[in-house]
Length: 121
Picture (cartoon, rainbow, N blue to C red):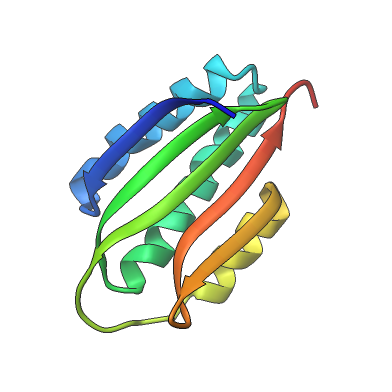
């Protein structure tokens, strides 16, 4: 599995538009339909919100082309407390829109979210 796009950035609201544009480009490059690309943007946004509520200050996104698109969203530089309010909605959206959703935990805290979209659906 080969990563074709990798992004490291601060979890700031001002950067979310830029991140969403990059996600759209990655989805297009992987051959996803427009609708799946939009769903992928929602999944990345919800993943970043989940990490932000867990106290992470930075995130790392990795995109892998594998019969579609695999995405890894990982929190970095944890600081502060946790506010899990809204997590159920984020997780429900991820499971409704993407396949193969995995929430990895460290010390009971979500630290990485993995999901995929198949090409040609």
